[in-house]
Length: 324
Image 1: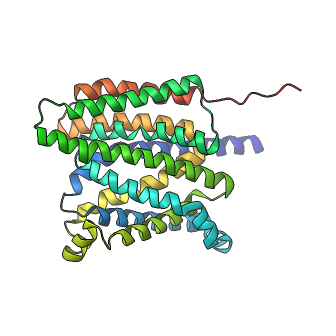
Image 2 (image 1 turned 135 degrees about the horizontal axis):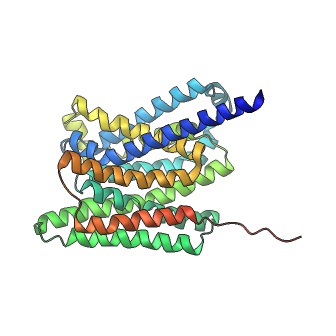
Image 3 (image 1 turned 90 degrees about the vertical axis):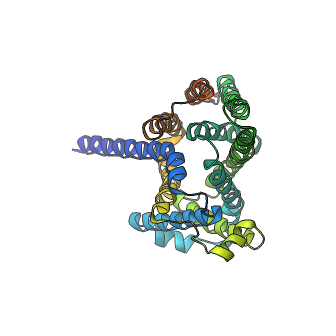
C-alpha cells in the first residue's frame, strides 16, 4: 500500500512545483509591463517599495501560520540572530528595489528584463569570493555571454538613432545604470542570504519577514533627508496612487514569496528555466498589449541570454571524489 501513496505524494509535489514555477514565470515576466501601466510617474518610489515590503510580511506570516511553523519560529527567534542573518541583505535589497522602480519607468520592458538577468553573473561572482562556490568552464563562458548581452543592450539603448539625445540620456542614466547597479546589489544580497541559510538555517518565510522589516526601517530612515521623504511630507504617502497601483505592489510581494518557494521545492535548476521562460513571457506580453515588437538589439541579445542561462544550469560544478 505504501508505494501508491508515495507515487501520489510525488505527483502532488511535482504538480505543486509546476504551479509555483508557472506563477513565478508569469509574475516575473509581467511585472515590468504591469508596473509601467499601473504605477504613474507621480507615485513616490519609496511609498511603493514600503507598501510592497509590508505586503511581503503579511503574506509570509499568513503562510507560516498556515503551515503551523509560526509558533515554533517565534519561540526560537532572537534579535541578534535576525540582525546577523538579515540586516545587511535587507538594507541592500531595499536600495535595489528603489533602483528597479526607477528603471521600470525609463526602459523598454523587454530591455529591462534582459538587463536584470545580469544579477546571475554578479551572484556567481560574489558566491565565489564569499563562499568559494566554484564554476565550470562552461558556466564561466555562459556568464560572459550574459555580460555581452547586457553590454549590447546598453550600447544599443544609448545610441538609438530614433531617440533624441535627451531620451537616450534618460534611458542610460535613469534606466540602464540603475538596473545594472541593482543587479550588482542583488548578487551581493543573494550571496549573503545563501550564507545565512547555510550557517543560520533560516527559513525563507522568516528571512522574508526579517528582511522586509529591516529594509522598511532603512527606507523610513532615509526619508528624513531624501527627496522622496520631502515629497511624502508635502503630498502624502499615497500621492499619485489609485486602486490599480496596488496590483503591481501585491504581485511584486507575491513574487518575492514565490522565489523562495521555487528555490526550496525545486532548486536552482528549475529557477533558471523559470527565468528563461519569464523573458519569453515579457516579450510576448509586450507585443500583445503594447503592439511593440522587440528592437534589433533585443532580438540579438535575447537568444544570448537564453543560451547563457541554459548552459549555466546544464553544466554545474561537480566536486570530484577522492579515491581511497
